[in-house]
Length: 311
Image 1 (cartoon, rainbow, N blue to C red):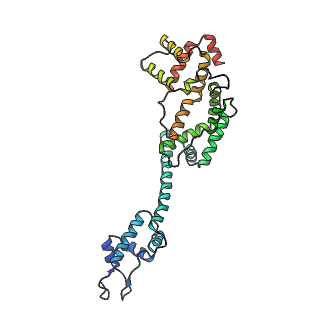
Image 2: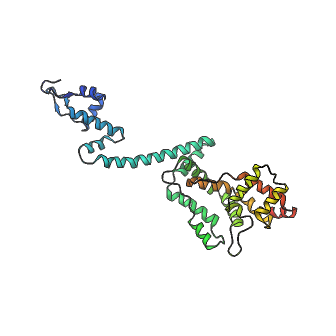
Image 3: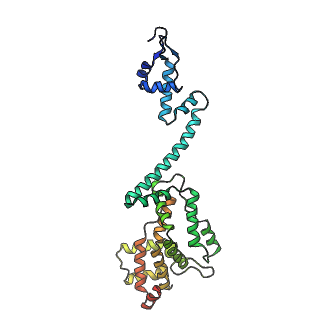
């Protein structure tokens, strides 16, 4: 210790008191974050008790992610800790969202065993802006729903239908969005879903198409699930009685056409993906129930009816 300054610390003593390397303290000092309070006769930097407290503050701010220039602005009074912290919260939120997207993409890649090209596509889909995601859905809506002859109330619902990924999505939502975006961009899927919509959407003045309740009333799937759980065969008499309960005297061939169109389109997969993207509680997977119901309807449709279904 220099005899001219008995109450001050050399940079070595400051390093010992704070547990930081001399090199770090010298750098902070050079940048103005922890300036020396004096110099010894030999020109060495000297610090005091307030310097120890200042070092602790600088260390805290640096550990929270602030750059040294921001630390200096705070210490000089040109800005406040609160203002800098607010900016860093926003930056960290953006970083967290980006990390969630990266995790979801990598998780999907690992699950699918994707190629490099597929990985690049999934990454692009996951990182689309809200406007770009909306454009994909709007194009899908126009091709699938556009021009359908439907009641005004239903047309309004179709027009306002949206599938929005939240600003802070979970990895599960990002994963579902990637899969959904791939699906709705597929021309074959769009064409199949359009056919399904035409067969199952109510037309003004004509009421609901036969069997459309399969898709619009989930209790149909729940009823079939209960029957399947009891081991009822789709070709038996009990299954035929269930069809009468569900569809009354509706044309079984027409019901089957609508059901098979939905199964072929993958409507159940689409429904579940939309629910996952939105973060909504989805109904249980109903694919097996729909397949069982289709088998029951095929058994109930006369031979001529089956030819008509396939035509």
